[in-house]
Length: 349
Image (cartoon, rainbow, N blue to C red; front, side, top):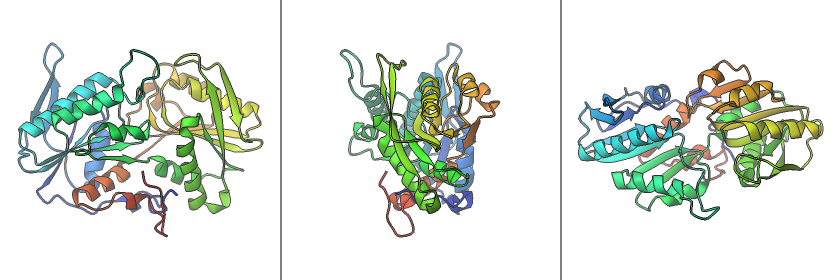
């Protein structure tokens, strides 16, 4: 079950911790705002690093702080432009390794290339595994991620590189538990997301037992990637406030179609929660014109300009969750205890 310990507000996450001379936190250019928020909660400043470009566009990394013998934490989601931010991350890891850092932990709030996690057709890469190999070859010691597209990506790293996959759902649970939802039903937009939706529903029911949230699923038939031929609903949403739970929103085409399908089947209101709000292309415009009441995402990825001005899009912070995880990793404490309720029960993420 999702925890009560992380459902108590930002103050519950606060890390009363100061630098002991062994930890140093760096950020690339992908999401410096989130990195600064995490560092502030840890009680440390961001390390001094230059991640710039040569005239021809090559990434130029220079670390200005001494990292010899220190535990280094690099905060860098590999969001758009994915290749640019991935190359920054790889070169930052390489630089820290060559500068004799004791241990290097990559904090990747959004893990790019995660959607190709297996061979669905002939002659395609398993990109999620290839990115893991690249990070390992550069010398990373540990990875902290938020809501990987699928849990098996943890296994793409070797046993010498442990991966902590944090569930941003605990942040969404607190937000929706504070809303006056009528007959709430948590919706999985596909079969692969049922476990995530089930965790979210359990979290709602623990945090607000009076909700007694239900669970339903949409089955999609795709002729090819990015297109949906048919949707079928498994479960009842008649007169219900629905919360669609997913790991990411890209162009929002599927999300808006799913919301329309739920409305057609009698849903009272439709909300959505996703860990990563990519909002590529026409996503923001589609959401603005859709039947969705609200689309809630976290700040693992910076909001694009169009999304910032969209009144239907709400962004929550995962900085307290990530900061507490970094503190526990650094002090060799349990991370799984973050996701347990007061009775000690919980789900291992």
